[in-house]
Figure 1 (cartoon, rainbow, N blue to C red):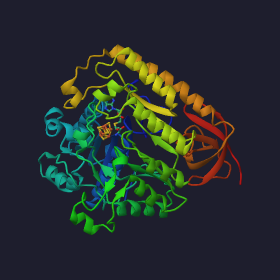
Figure 2: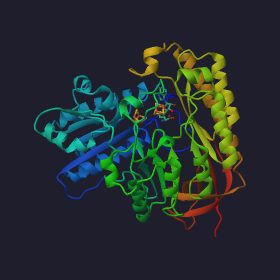
Figure 3: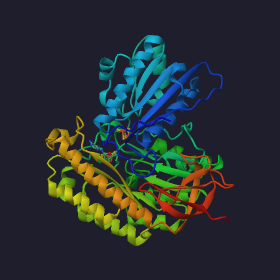
Figure 4: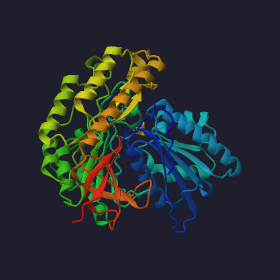
Length: 488
Ligand code: SAH
Ligand code: SF4
Ligand code: F3S
Protein backbone atom coordinates (compact mmCIF):
# COMPACT_ATOMS: atom_id res chain seq x y z
CA UNK A 1 0.00 0.00 0.00
CA UNK A 2 1.32 3.43 -0.89
CA UNK A 3 0.74 6.44 1.22
CA UNK A 4 0.87 9.93 -0.16
CA UNK A 5 1.27 12.32 2.72
CA UNK A 6 2.13 15.65 1.25
CA UNK A 7 2.05 18.54 3.71
CA UNK A 8 0.31 19.85 6.78
CA UNK A 9 -2.95 19.89 4.86
CA UNK A 10 -3.02 16.20 5.67
CA UNK A 11 -2.20 15.64 9.27
CA UNK A 12 -3.02 12.31 10.74
CA UNK A 13 -2.68 11.60 14.39
CA UNK A 14 -3.11 8.20 15.86
CA UNK A 15 -4.85 5.55 13.85
CA UNK A 16 -4.38 4.50 10.28
CA UNK A 17 -6.46 5.38 7.24
CA UNK A 18 -9.25 7.35 8.77
CA UNK A 19 -11.35 9.55 6.64
CA UNK A 20 -10.33 12.44 4.45
CA UNK A 21 -6.66 11.68 4.18
CA UNK A 22 -5.27 11.49 0.71
CA UNK A 23 -4.41 7.88 1.35
CA UNK A 24 -4.30 5.49 -1.55
CA UNK A 25 -5.48 1.93 -1.35
CA UNK A 26 -4.98 -0.43 -4.21
CA UNK A 27 -6.87 -3.62 -4.96
CA UNK A 28 -5.25 -6.97 -4.33
CA UNK A 29 -4.53 -9.62 -6.94
CA UNK A 30 -7.42 -11.96 -7.49
CA UNK A 31 -6.87 -14.25 -10.42
CA UNK A 32 -9.71 -16.63 -11.16
CA UNK A 33 -8.86 -16.95 -14.83
CA UNK A 34 -11.20 -14.24 -16.06
CA UNK A 35 -10.25 -12.57 -19.29
CA UNK A 36 -9.86 -8.96 -18.20
CA UNK A 37 -8.18 -7.32 -15.25
CA UNK A 38 -9.26 -4.36 -13.12
CA UNK A 39 -6.91 -2.13 -11.12
CA UNK A 40 -8.64 0.17 -8.64
CA UNK A 41 -7.16 2.91 -6.46
CA UNK A 42 -9.18 4.63 -3.73
CA UNK A 43 -8.71 8.11 -2.32
CA UNK A 44 -10.50 9.98 0.46
CA UNK A 45 -12.71 8.67 3.21
CA UNK A 46 -13.74 5.21 4.40
CA UNK A 47 -16.99 5.53 2.43
CA UNK A 48 -14.92 5.59 -0.75
CA UNK A 49 -12.91 2.52 0.26
CA UNK A 50 -16.16 0.80 1.06
CA UNK A 51 -17.58 1.83 -2.35
CA UNK A 52 -14.53 0.40 -4.12
CA UNK A 53 -15.46 -2.97 -2.61
CA UNK A 54 -18.94 -2.65 -4.12
CA UNK A 55 -17.48 -1.60 -7.48
CA UNK A 56 -15.15 -4.61 -7.44
CA UNK A 57 -18.09 -6.90 -6.74
CA UNK A 58 -20.03 -5.45 -9.70
CA UNK A 59 -16.98 -5.72 -11.98
CA UNK A 60 -16.21 -9.30 -10.93
CA UNK A 61 -19.73 -10.30 -11.88
CA UNK A 62 -19.16 -8.77 -15.29
CA UNK A 63 -15.98 -10.75 -15.98
CA UNK A 64 -13.07 -8.96 -14.32
CA UNK A 65 -10.32 -10.17 -11.98
CA UNK A 66 -8.40 -7.63 -9.90
CA UNK A 67 -4.70 -6.86 -10.06
CA UNK A 68 -2.38 -4.79 -7.88
CA UNK A 69 -0.19 -3.93 -10.88
CA UNK A 70 -1.70 -1.33 -13.21
CA UNK A 71 0.75 -2.40 -15.94
CA UNK A 72 -1.23 -5.58 -16.40
CA UNK A 73 -4.68 -3.95 -16.08
CA UNK A 74 -7.20 -3.64 -18.90
CA UNK A 75 -9.22 -1.17 -16.87
CA UNK A 76 -7.91 1.34 -14.31
CA UNK A 77 -10.35 3.05 -11.91
CA UNK A 78 -9.50 5.94 -9.61
CA UNK A 79 -12.15 6.33 -6.90
CA UNK A 80 -11.65 9.99 -6.11
CA UNK A 81 -12.17 12.59 -3.37
CA UNK A 82 -13.01 16.30 -3.66
CA UNK A 83 -12.98 17.32 -0.02
CA UNK A 84 -10.05 19.74 -0.32
CA UNK A 85 -8.27 21.17 -3.34
CA UNK A 86 -5.22 19.08 -2.51
CA UNK A 87 -7.24 15.85 -2.82
CA UNK A 88 -8.18 16.75 -6.40
CA UNK A 89 -4.62 17.80 -7.25
CA UNK A 90 -3.36 14.39 -6.12
CA UNK A 91 -5.72 12.68 -8.57
CA UNK A 92 -4.79 15.04 -11.43
CA UNK A 93 -1.14 14.25 -10.79
CA UNK A 94 -1.91 10.54 -10.89
CA UNK A 95 -3.79 10.97 -14.17
CA UNK A 96 -0.64 12.52 -15.69
CA UNK A 97 1.20 9.34 -14.78
CA UNK A 98 -1.50 7.19 -16.39
CA UNK A 99 -1.30 9.36 -19.47
CA UNK A 100 2.29 8.21 -19.88
CA UNK A 101 1.27 4.56 -19.35
CA UNK A 102 -1.49 4.86 -21.92
CA UNK A 103 1.01 5.92 -24.57
CA UNK A 104 2.55 2.45 -24.16
CA UNK A 105 -0.81 0.72 -23.69
CA UNK A 106 -3.38 2.58 -25.80
CA UNK A 107 -6.10 -0.01 -25.07
CA UNK A 108 -6.03 0.56 -21.31
CA UNK A 109 -9.34 2.08 -20.16
CA UNK A 110 -9.16 4.83 -17.48
CA UNK A 111 -12.22 5.60 -15.35
CA UNK A 112 -12.79 8.29 -12.73
CA UNK A 113 -15.27 7.28 -10.03
CA UNK A 114 -16.41 8.91 -6.80
CA UNK A 115 -16.70 12.48 -5.67
CA UNK A 116 -14.52 14.20 -8.28
CA UNK A 117 -16.49 12.43 -11.02
CA UNK A 118 -19.71 13.70 -9.49
CA UNK A 119 -18.44 17.26 -9.00
CA UNK A 120 -16.90 17.74 -12.44
CA UNK A 121 -19.05 15.39 -14.53
CA UNK A 122 -18.33 15.42 -18.29
CA UNK A 123 -16.00 18.41 -17.82
CA UNK A 124 -13.45 15.83 -16.66
CA UNK A 125 -13.47 14.27 -20.12
CA UNK A 126 -12.59 17.64 -21.64
CA UNK A 127 -9.96 18.52 -19.05
CA UNK A 128 -8.25 15.14 -18.82
CA UNK A 129 -7.93 13.51 -22.22
CA UNK A 130 -6.70 10.25 -20.69
CA UNK A 131 -10.11 9.65 -19.07
CA UNK A 132 -12.59 7.36 -20.87
CA UNK A 133 -15.24 6.95 -18.21
CA UNK A 134 -16.77 9.22 -15.51
CA UNK A 135 -19.07 7.56 -12.96
CA UNK A 136 -20.61 9.14 -9.86
CA UNK A 137 -21.13 7.34 -6.51
CA UNK A 138 -24.76 6.36 -7.17
CA UNK A 139 -24.23 4.98 -10.68
CA UNK A 140 -21.97 1.98 -10.06
CA UNK A 141 -24.61 -0.56 -11.07
CA UNK A 142 -24.32 0.93 -14.55
CA UNK A 143 -20.56 0.23 -14.77
CA UNK A 144 -20.77 -2.92 -16.95
CA UNK A 145 -22.77 -1.12 -19.63
CA UNK A 146 -20.60 2.00 -19.41
CA UNK A 147 -17.48 -0.16 -19.84
CA UNK A 148 -19.14 -1.79 -22.86
CA UNK A 149 -19.83 1.67 -24.27
CA UNK A 150 -16.12 2.53 -24.00
CA UNK A 151 -15.27 -0.84 -25.56
CA UNK A 152 -17.34 0.17 -28.54
CA UNK A 153 -15.28 3.32 -28.99
CA UNK A 154 -17.25 5.98 -27.09
CA UNK A 155 -16.52 7.88 -23.90
CA UNK A 156 -19.08 7.23 -21.14
CA UNK A 157 -20.53 9.34 -18.31
CA UNK A 158 -23.13 8.59 -15.62
CA UNK A 159 -23.33 11.00 -12.69
CA UNK A 160 -26.99 10.50 -11.85
CA UNK A 161 -27.58 10.96 -8.09
CA UNK A 162 -30.23 8.72 -6.60
CA UNK A 163 -32.54 9.30 -3.64
CA UNK A 164 -32.72 5.55 -3.01
CA UNK A 165 -29.57 3.71 -4.00
CA UNK A 166 -27.84 2.03 -1.03
CA UNK A 167 -26.33 -1.01 -2.83
CA UNK A 168 -27.96 -3.01 -0.01
CA UNK A 169 -28.09 -6.24 -2.01
CA UNK A 170 -24.48 -6.17 -3.25
CA UNK A 171 -21.93 -8.21 -1.28
CA UNK A 172 -18.73 -6.16 -1.23
CA UNK A 173 -15.49 -7.88 -2.26
CA UNK A 174 -13.17 -7.12 0.66
CA UNK A 175 -10.05 -5.38 -0.67
CA UNK A 176 -6.79 -5.09 1.27
CA UNK A 177 -8.50 -7.02 4.00
CA UNK A 178 -6.70 -8.12 7.15
CA UNK A 179 -9.54 -10.63 7.62
CA UNK A 180 -10.32 -9.15 11.05
CA UNK A 181 -11.84 -5.67 10.56
CA UNK A 182 -14.30 -4.49 7.91
CA UNK A 183 -16.48 -1.51 7.03
CA UNK A 184 -20.24 -1.68 6.57
CA UNK A 185 -21.97 1.26 4.86
CA UNK A 186 -25.23 1.97 6.69
CA UNK A 187 -26.29 5.10 4.84
CA UNK A 188 -25.27 7.30 1.94
CA UNK A 189 -25.28 11.02 1.21
CA UNK A 190 -25.66 13.95 3.58
CA UNK A 191 -28.42 16.53 4.12
CA UNK A 192 -26.47 18.79 6.44
CA UNK A 193 -25.08 21.47 4.16
CA UNK A 194 -22.14 22.56 6.30
CA UNK A 195 -21.09 25.66 4.39
CA UNK A 196 -17.49 24.53 3.74
CA UNK A 197 -18.35 21.04 2.55
CA UNK A 198 -18.65 19.56 -0.92
CA UNK A 199 -20.05 16.19 0.23
CA UNK A 200 -23.80 17.02 -0.07
CA UNK A 201 -23.11 17.92 -3.72
CA UNK A 202 -20.98 14.88 -4.52
CA UNK A 203 -22.92 12.27 -2.56
CA UNK A 204 -26.47 13.56 -2.79
CA UNK A 205 -29.37 13.22 -0.40
CA UNK A 206 -29.14 11.25 2.79
CA UNK A 207 -30.68 7.76 2.73
CA UNK A 208 -30.50 4.87 5.17
CA UNK A 209 -29.92 1.26 4.26
CA UNK A 210 -32.30 -1.54 5.21
CA UNK A 211 -31.31 -2.66 8.74
CA UNK A 212 -31.96 -6.29 7.87
CA UNK A 213 -29.29 -6.20 5.13
CA UNK A 214 -26.85 -4.48 7.53
CA UNK A 215 -27.28 -7.15 10.22
CA UNK A 216 -26.99 -9.87 7.57
CA UNK A 217 -23.71 -8.40 6.32
CA UNK A 218 -22.37 -8.28 9.89
CA UNK A 219 -23.38 -11.94 10.42
CA UNK A 220 -21.68 -13.00 7.19
CA UNK A 221 -18.51 -11.17 8.15
CA UNK A 222 -18.53 -12.76 11.60
CA UNK A 223 -18.98 -16.23 10.11
CA UNK A 224 -16.04 -15.54 7.78
CA UNK A 225 -13.83 -14.84 10.81
CA UNK A 226 -14.06 -11.04 10.98
CA UNK A 227 -14.16 -9.71 14.55
CA UNK A 228 -14.81 -5.99 14.13
CA UNK A 229 -17.17 -3.96 11.95
CA UNK A 230 -17.27 -0.19 11.55
CA UNK A 231 -20.69 1.19 10.61
CA UNK A 232 -20.15 4.02 8.16
CA UNK A 233 -22.12 7.13 7.30
CA UNK A 234 -21.44 10.87 7.04
CA UNK A 235 -23.80 11.38 9.97
CA UNK A 236 -24.66 8.04 11.56
CA UNK A 237 -26.85 9.61 14.24
CA UNK A 238 -29.44 10.55 11.66
CA UNK A 239 -29.74 6.94 10.50
CA UNK A 240 -33.44 6.20 10.24
CA UNK A 241 -35.36 3.39 8.66
CA UNK A 242 -39.14 3.63 8.75
CA UNK A 243 -42.12 2.59 6.67
CA UNK A 244 -42.89 6.26 5.92
CA UNK A 245 -39.40 7.30 4.90
CA UNK A 246 -38.41 4.23 3.00
CA UNK A 247 -40.68 3.55 0.10
CA UNK A 248 -43.06 0.66 -0.11
CA UNK A 249 -41.17 -1.43 -2.64
CA UNK A 250 -38.08 -1.44 -0.44
CA UNK A 251 -40.17 -2.14 2.63
CA UNK A 252 -41.72 -5.20 1.03
CA UNK A 253 -38.27 -6.58 0.36
CA UNK A 254 -37.22 -5.86 3.93
CA UNK A 255 -38.13 -7.95 6.93
CA UNK A 256 -38.10 -4.89 9.17
CA UNK A 257 -41.31 -2.92 9.60
CA UNK A 258 -40.73 -0.87 12.76
CA UNK A 259 -38.90 2.47 12.93
CA UNK A 260 -35.19 1.84 13.45
CA UNK A 261 -32.97 4.69 14.65
CA UNK A 262 -29.20 4.56 15.09
CA UNK A 263 -29.35 3.38 18.72
CA UNK A 264 -31.66 0.51 17.67
CA UNK A 265 -29.37 -0.39 14.77
CA UNK A 266 -26.32 -0.42 17.06
CA UNK A 267 -28.13 -2.81 19.37
CA UNK A 268 -29.15 -5.13 16.51
CA UNK A 269 -25.55 -5.35 15.27
CA UNK A 270 -24.16 -5.74 18.80
CA UNK A 271 -26.43 -8.76 19.25
CA UNK A 272 -24.87 -10.59 16.26
CA UNK A 273 -22.21 -11.92 18.68
CA UNK A 274 -20.48 -10.69 21.85
CA UNK A 275 -17.26 -11.64 20.01
CA UNK A 276 -17.94 -9.07 17.27
CA UNK A 277 -16.74 -5.55 18.06
CA UNK A 278 -18.76 -2.64 16.74
CA UNK A 279 -17.42 0.82 15.84
CA UNK A 280 -19.10 3.64 13.95
CA UNK A 281 -18.24 6.90 12.24
CA UNK A 282 -19.07 9.81 11.95
CA UNK A 283 -21.19 11.26 14.76
CA UNK A 284 -22.61 14.76 14.33
CA UNK A 285 -22.64 16.84 17.53
CA UNK A 286 -26.11 18.17 16.78
CA UNK A 287 -27.59 14.66 16.51
CA UNK A 288 -25.78 12.34 18.93
CA UNK A 289 -28.33 11.27 21.53
CA UNK A 290 -28.10 10.01 25.10
CA UNK A 291 -29.95 6.92 23.84
CA UNK A 292 -26.91 6.10 21.64
CA UNK A 293 -24.56 6.66 24.60
CA UNK A 294 -26.65 4.39 26.84
CA UNK A 295 -26.69 1.68 24.14
CA UNK A 296 -22.89 1.93 23.94
CA UNK A 297 -22.71 1.51 27.70
CA UNK A 298 -25.07 -1.48 27.67
CA UNK A 299 -22.96 -3.60 25.29
CA UNK A 300 -19.33 -4.43 26.04
CA UNK A 301 -18.72 -5.19 22.37
CA UNK A 302 -19.63 -1.65 21.25
CA UNK A 303 -16.27 0.14 21.37
CA UNK A 304 -16.01 3.13 23.66
CA UNK A 305 -14.87 5.61 21.07
CA UNK A 306 -16.67 8.51 19.38
CA UNK A 307 -15.48 10.59 16.44
CA UNK A 308 -17.26 13.87 17.14
CA UNK A 309 -15.91 16.56 14.79
CA UNK A 310 -16.12 20.03 16.32
CA UNK A 311 -14.60 21.94 13.34
CA UNK A 312 -14.30 25.10 15.49
CA UNK A 313 -14.63 26.10 19.15
CA UNK A 314 -16.26 29.43 18.43
CA UNK A 315 -20.02 29.86 18.16
CA UNK A 316 -19.93 32.64 15.53
CA UNK A 317 -17.65 30.57 13.28
CA UNK A 318 -19.78 27.46 13.86
CA UNK A 319 -22.78 29.50 12.76
CA UNK A 320 -21.01 30.62 9.57
CA UNK A 321 -20.07 27.00 8.99
CA UNK A 322 -23.77 26.11 9.31
CA UNK A 323 -22.93 23.39 11.83
CA UNK A 324 -26.18 24.20 13.71
CA UNK A 325 -24.71 23.89 17.21
CA UNK A 326 -22.94 26.28 19.56
CA UNK A 327 -19.76 25.83 21.62
CA UNK A 328 -22.00 25.28 24.67
CA UNK A 329 -24.07 22.61 22.92
CA UNK A 330 -20.90 20.80 21.88
CA UNK A 331 -19.55 20.93 25.44
CA UNK A 332 -22.86 19.59 26.72
CA UNK A 333 -22.54 16.55 24.41
CA UNK A 334 -18.97 15.94 25.59
CA UNK A 335 -20.13 16.20 29.22
CA UNK A 336 -22.86 13.62 28.43
CA UNK A 337 -20.25 11.24 26.97
CA UNK A 338 -18.04 11.64 30.03
CA UNK A 339 -20.89 11.18 32.49
CA UNK A 340 -22.47 8.15 30.75
CA UNK A 341 -19.35 6.39 29.42
CA UNK A 342 -16.62 7.74 31.69
CA UNK A 343 -13.27 9.37 31.11
CA UNK A 344 -11.73 6.41 29.31
CA UNK A 345 -14.09 6.73 26.31
CA UNK A 346 -12.00 7.87 23.34
CA UNK A 347 -13.08 11.10 21.67
CA UNK A 348 -11.58 12.46 18.46
CA UNK A 349 -12.32 15.50 16.33
CA UNK A 350 -11.89 17.19 12.98
CA UNK A 351 -10.72 20.80 13.16
CA UNK A 352 -10.61 23.45 10.44
CA UNK A 353 -8.17 26.37 10.86
CA UNK A 354 -8.68 29.71 9.15
CA UNK A 355 -12.31 29.50 8.03
CA UNK A 356 -13.63 32.69 6.37
CA UNK A 357 -13.39 35.77 8.67
CA UNK A 358 -12.07 33.76 11.65
CA UNK A 359 -10.30 36.16 14.04
CA UNK A 360 -7.31 35.37 16.21
CA UNK A 361 -9.56 35.28 19.32
CA UNK A 362 -11.95 32.90 17.59
CA UNK A 363 -9.02 30.65 16.70
CA UNK A 364 -8.04 30.71 20.39
CA UNK A 365 -11.55 29.39 21.16
CA UNK A 366 -10.72 26.26 19.11
CA UNK A 367 -7.59 25.77 21.21
CA UNK A 368 -9.45 26.19 24.50
CA UNK A 369 -12.15 23.76 23.35
CA UNK A 370 -9.41 21.21 22.69
CA UNK A 371 -8.08 21.80 26.20
CA UNK A 372 -11.56 21.25 27.61
CA UNK A 373 -12.39 18.08 25.70
CA UNK A 374 -8.94 16.45 25.81
CA UNK A 375 -9.28 14.70 22.44
CA UNK A 376 -7.31 11.49 22.06
CA UNK A 377 -6.52 12.53 18.51
CA UNK A 378 -7.77 14.83 15.76
CA UNK A 379 -7.74 15.24 12.02
CA UNK A 380 -6.69 18.80 11.39
CA UNK A 381 -6.93 20.87 8.23
CA UNK A 382 -6.75 24.43 7.05
CA UNK A 383 -9.77 25.72 5.19
CA UNK A 384 -9.79 25.01 1.48
CA UNK A 385 -12.54 26.76 -0.49
CA UNK A 386 -14.58 24.35 -2.60
CA UNK A 387 -16.45 25.62 -5.67
CA UNK A 388 -20.24 25.53 -5.39
CA UNK A 389 -20.39 25.29 -1.60
CA UNK A 390 -22.40 27.76 0.51
CA UNK A 391 -19.20 29.30 1.89
CA UNK A 392 -17.75 29.80 -1.59
CA UNK A 393 -20.93 31.62 -2.60
CA UNK A 394 -21.46 33.69 0.54
CA UNK A 395 -18.12 34.40 2.21
CA UNK A 396 -14.71 35.62 1.19
CA UNK A 397 -11.85 33.18 1.72
CA UNK A 398 -10.00 36.04 3.41
CA UNK A 399 -7.53 34.41 5.80
CA UNK A 400 -4.05 34.46 4.19
CA UNK A 401 -2.49 31.04 3.66
CA UNK A 402 0.39 31.87 6.01
CA UNK A 403 -2.09 32.67 8.80
CA UNK A 404 -4.12 29.51 8.10
CA UNK A 405 -0.94 27.43 8.31
CA UNK A 406 0.21 29.15 11.49
CA UNK A 407 -3.15 28.53 13.17
CA UNK A 408 -3.14 24.96 11.95
CA UNK A 409 0.32 24.35 13.36
CA UNK A 410 -0.84 25.69 16.74
CA UNK A 411 -3.81 23.31 16.65
CA UNK A 412 -1.50 20.41 15.76
CA UNK A 413 0.98 21.26 18.53
CA UNK A 414 -1.86 21.45 21.03
CA UNK A 415 -3.26 18.09 19.90
CA UNK A 416 0.14 16.41 20.14
CA UNK A 417 0.51 17.51 23.74
CA UNK A 418 -2.99 16.35 24.60
CA UNK A 419 -2.56 13.00 22.77
CA UNK A 420 0.64 12.32 24.68
CA UNK A 421 -0.97 13.19 28.02
CA UNK A 422 -4.03 11.04 27.24
CA UNK A 423 -1.84 8.10 26.18
CA UNK A 424 0.31 8.42 29.31
CA UNK A 425 -2.85 7.96 31.36
CA UNK A 426 -3.17 4.45 29.84
CA UNK A 427 0.22 3.33 31.15
CA UNK A 428 -0.18 0.71 33.88
CA UNK A 429 -3.65 -0.33 32.70
CA UNK A 430 -4.59 -3.74 31.34
CA UNK A 431 -6.63 -3.23 28.15
CA UNK A 432 -8.44 -5.57 25.81
CA UNK A 433 -6.96 -5.48 22.30
CA UNK A 434 -8.20 -7.17 19.12
CA UNK A 435 -5.13 -8.29 17.17
CA UNK A 436 -5.20 -7.03 13.57
CA UNK A 437 -1.81 -8.31 12.33
CA UNK A 438 1.91 -7.70 12.52
CA UNK A 439 3.18 -4.32 13.62
CA UNK A 440 4.51 -2.11 10.84
CA UNK A 441 8.06 -2.18 12.13
CA UNK A 442 8.65 -5.82 13.05
CA UNK A 443 7.37 -9.32 12.46
CA UNK A 444 8.16 -10.09 16.09
CA UNK A 445 5.42 -7.69 17.20
CA UNK A 446 1.69 -7.70 16.70
CA UNK A 447 -0.66 -4.74 16.72
CA UNK A 448 -4.31 -4.09 17.28
CA UNK A 449 -6.54 -1.46 18.84
CA UNK A 450 -8.04 -0.98 22.24
CA UNK A 451 -11.68 -0.09 22.72
CA UNK A 452 -10.85 3.65 22.50
CA UNK A 453 -9.37 3.08 19.02
CA UNK A 454 -5.73 3.55 20.00
CA UNK A 455 -3.11 1.41 18.27
CA UNK A 456 -1.35 -0.96 20.71
CA UNK A 457 1.88 -2.81 19.82
CA UNK A 458 3.25 -5.84 21.73
CA UNK A 459 5.57 -8.87 21.33
CA UNK A 460 3.72 -11.61 19.49
CA UNK A 461 4.41 -14.63 21.69
CA UNK A 462 2.11 -17.45 20.50
CA UNK A 463 -0.79 -15.18 19.53
CA UNK A 464 -2.23 -14.32 16.14
CA UNK A 465 -4.57 -11.93 14.39
CA UNK A 466 -8.26 -12.19 15.16
CA UNK A 467 -7.67 -13.00 18.84
CA UNK A 468 -8.66 -10.81 21.76
CA UNK A 469 -5.83 -10.36 24.27
CA UNK A 470 -5.31 -8.49 27.53
CA UNK A 471 -2.34 -6.13 27.22
CA UNK A 472 -0.54 -4.38 30.08
CA UNK A 473 0.32 -0.93 28.70
CA UNK A 474 3.90 0.00 29.53
CA UNK A 475 4.87 2.90 27.24
CA UNK A 476 3.50 5.31 24.67
CA UNK A 477 4.23 7.90 22.00
CA UNK A 478 1.75 10.56 20.81
CA UNK A 479 0.29 8.01 18.39
CA UNK A 480 0.80 4.51 19.81
CA UNK A 481 0.66 2.49 23.02
CA UNK A 482 2.97 -0.45 23.65
CA UNK A 483 2.99 -3.22 26.21
CA UNK A 484 2.92 -6.96 26.88
CA UNK A 485 0.20 -9.57 26.62
CA UNK A 486 -0.86 -10.92 29.98
CA UNK A 487 -1.18 -14.66 29.35
CA UNK A 488 -4.53 -16.06 30.45
N1 SAH B 1 -19.40 13.98 7.86
C1 SAH B 1 -18.28 14.30 8.60
C2 SAH B 1 -17.13 14.88 7.84
C3 SAH B 1 -16.83 14.49 6.46
S1 SAH B 1 -15.59 15.43 5.69
C4 SAH B 1 -18.69 15.33 9.64
O1 SAH B 1 -19.68 15.96 9.56
O2 SAH B 1 -17.90 15.54 10.54
C5 SAH B 1 -14.26 15.20 6.83
C6 SAH B 1 -13.64 16.44 7.35
O3 SAH B 1 -12.99 17.16 6.32
C7 SAH B 1 -14.60 17.44 7.93
O4 SAH B 1 -15.00 17.07 9.21
C8 SAH B 1 -13.81 18.71 7.91
O5 SAH B 1 -13.03 18.85 9.08
C9 SAH B 1 -12.88 18.50 6.72
N2 SAH B 1 -13.29 19.36 5.61
C10 SAH B 1 -14.41 19.28 4.88
N3 SAH B 1 -14.45 20.29 3.97
C11 SAH B 1 -13.32 21.00 4.12
C12 SAH B 1 -12.79 22.15 3.48
N4 SAH B 1 -13.46 22.76 2.51
N5 SAH B 1 -11.59 22.62 3.90
C13 SAH B 1 -10.92 22.00 4.89
N6 SAH B 1 -11.37 20.90 5.53
C14 SAH B 1 -12.56 20.41 5.16
FE1 SF4 C 1 -19.97 17.61 5.10
FE2 SF4 C 1 -21.28 18.55 7.18
FE3 SF4 C 1 -22.27 16.50 5.82
FE4 SF4 C 1 -20.12 16.17 7.32
S1 SF4 C 1 -22.15 16.70 8.06
S2 SF4 C 1 -20.41 15.45 5.23
S3 SF4 C 1 -19.06 18.10 7.10
S4 SF4 C 1 -22.02 18.59 5.07
FE1 F3S D 1 -13.86 12.80 -0.12
FE2 F3S D 1 -16.18 12.18 -1.11
FE3 F3S D 1 -15.35 11.06 1.13
S1 F3S D 1 -15.30 14.20 -1.05
S2 F3S D 1 -14.09 12.66 2.03
S3 F3S D 1 -14.43 10.81 -0.86
S4 F3S D 1 -17.44 11.59 0.62
